[in-house]
Length: 238
Ligand SMILES: [Ca+2]
Image (tube, rainbow, N blue to C red):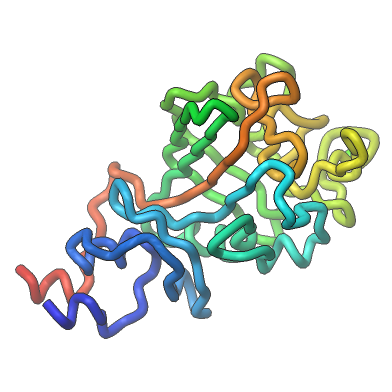
């Protein structure tokens, strides 16, 4: 059991860590190795171990109006508001294991809404970290693959204030609301959802300037649709 608390190899993601600890690992910051490089990530260990790729608190102190290279490698505090990094999100979702994307939204009355896209793939930097999403289910509205407001985020490339890859004649990441720019996002022309605008967490009718949300999280973990390869630690247990 001790070897399971200290697995011999760095886990690929939080789910593998959850598995190798028999579900006992607590929430917190862990070292993971999605590809070649070791990175630190926040693990939300409920429901099988989610690797948190984004967390924002409305009007928090972390600035999300950042450059391409900052979104590439991540910014903020892993225990608080942060972006894990497009390169690592790409590494996590583009391996041999199928991943899903989890969205968690909490409004000012502490009402929580959830959603999942299965599968999720964020393509590489050569494809401007294009977002590819599968089927949705959840209690929140599907704000990324439906387009009731003519904004479709699925299949869009990532845009930052210094890299305009969106479908608008201006740069969506530079458009301000009450003096705050939108931040990096998979914009269309521009948004039916944007979890990186610091003063208004936006998710169609669930979170907007009339119905304020206080917190949002984006998380990934292997899809239930695939059999996960067990670590050495898990085999020892069996
Ligand atoms: Ca544009």
